[in-house]
Image 1 (cartoon, helix red, strand yellow):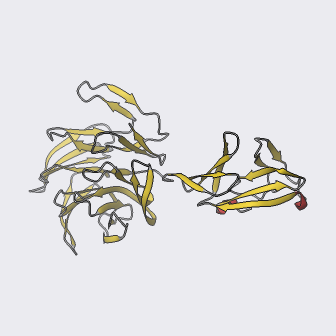
Image 2 (cartoon, rainbow, N blue to C red; image 1 turned 135 degrees about the horizontal axis):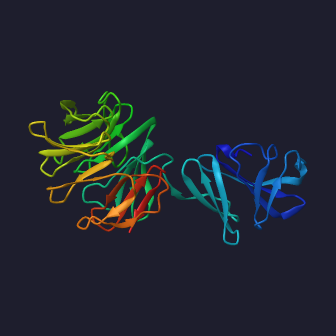
Image 3 (tube, rainbow, N blue to C red; image 1 turned 180 degrees about the horizontal axis):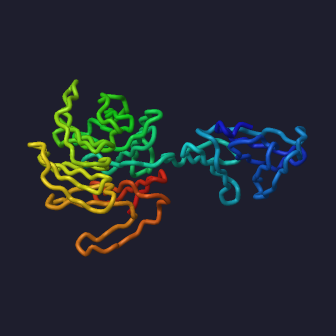
Length: 347
């Protein structure tokens, strides 16, 4: 049995052919340690160390392979089906009769750091985490595309307004751009920030991107067909930049930082217009639709009534801090992501 490599094994007793055991132990041999096993008839037993070692009593019926080590196994209803969970965030379903795996759900295995909807599209959204960026299809709750960059963490992601580029911020100090349809790399900006790139945004004309770093600096980059050049560096924050938003005419932007400041910038003269100070960790910021106010947020999982200033809902789906929340362009659903790796869609 090699469950650690993603194998699920079906074993039966020769002395009782009608019984079937499904084994789910990500480590340890079948009888080398105390192992819990489940019977197809919902029986349960423990196999103590050193007992039942006689090989003739057991026979291998079937085997399937899934992605990642098997971490959980459970039966459904009258045991005609069972579900398999793996450490790669995959959930599979199988019937005893066929013993064929069917992928039914998938999620990130690490904290989800950002989420974005393409302009005017509610059926697709993009999330980022450690090692990858994922594109999701909202109506079917399915992953459509996975862009993998091993051994690094993506802190923020943005889709340009024309929908032609996914721009992303990574902890190795690089800004990476990809083709949304295929995930193919378009360009990389090396050494964008010394302490990693922590926030990213793009102007509506798609000719500039603005990046924030763990060093507190804000970089403004001119993007051409084949060139990416640093235009300006803005220095006001003393902590990591957590979020960047640009207004509709691209003449003003706002940055939030973990140092408790939000700075409104003049993107024509590249100077500070206003600074907001508070005794908190600003995790995200956005403009009011009328752009005469800005709205900031933290990690308390609460939904507030804007006019009354009162809590209307408290989310109970996530087990970790909420890192980002977005309302779809059609205003029909809300998508939230959190440090527990979950992506939840709310009606």
